Length: 328
Ligand code: CP
Image 1 (cartoon, rainbow, N blue to C red):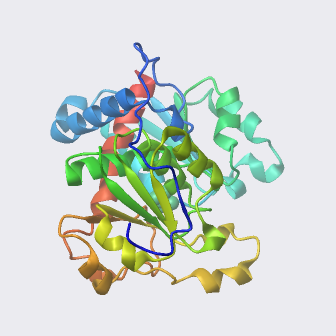
Image 2 (cartoon, rainbow, N blue to C red):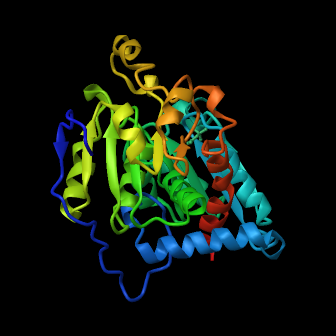
Image 3 (tube, rainbow, N blue to C red):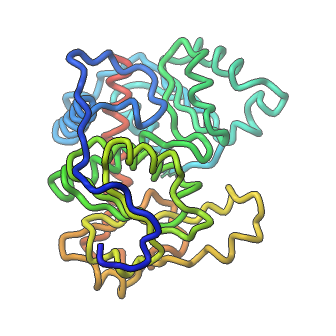
């Protein structure tokens, strides 16, 4: 990258794809992106693509099975796309929005006790929780598969799976892609999971474009260094735009700030608008896990390179594939 403000660059060299085990264990809990091998990723994407092309073949596949959705934080896409996925496969759903207020957590019940009980009512649990590590804690006591639908500032592995699936569908490849992650890279769980997944592919390069206050987490960068995956850290979005295949824009996560006074200085720092689209390659795409605030100008929406609403729709097929795999 020909920019002068790169704060840090990993050792040069091609990304290394770790060897796959001969026999994959069946998929049970979905907790973090690092658990997915390239072979398992391929199997998930193939199943999702099959479900997209032949929805009728899968319509009754999970008949009689129940998915419990326990959401202790707000959600539109993850909650509703999991529900849609289960219903499209013929299953049923139970659950609670705002579980902090409307479940017995409000009376002081521990997460572990809630999971032990709900595992007796459902065949799979989808959990969103404000505490990092909550999904792993829950899985440790769950008798049924547990899927992490976002644990605080930690990870959001199913979002990263649909992100990767979107890149593959939009660009036709994953090896060799160049991705800029932009915005709140410290608190945004989607970018943590996505960086781990991308590190599985050959020749991938990443740019982390963020104010220093919300820079990418050190453990993610250490993971990339360990695999020899090249990355660069910069504040200069304009310089990065012509270099990349994917701009992955994110929201500054106001709700994660210990000191709300620091939010206004960061909000609006990086905005993708018509000027920025003019610097992007003709086949590059703009992604966003959504919801967006002002970090992508709605004037960009009609541009065919704006992939974020297609990305959100891909969540249904990916979550259908995951539910099918953990319940098969
Ligand atoms: N991308 C995402 O996780 O969106 P929701 O918070 O609406 O589920």
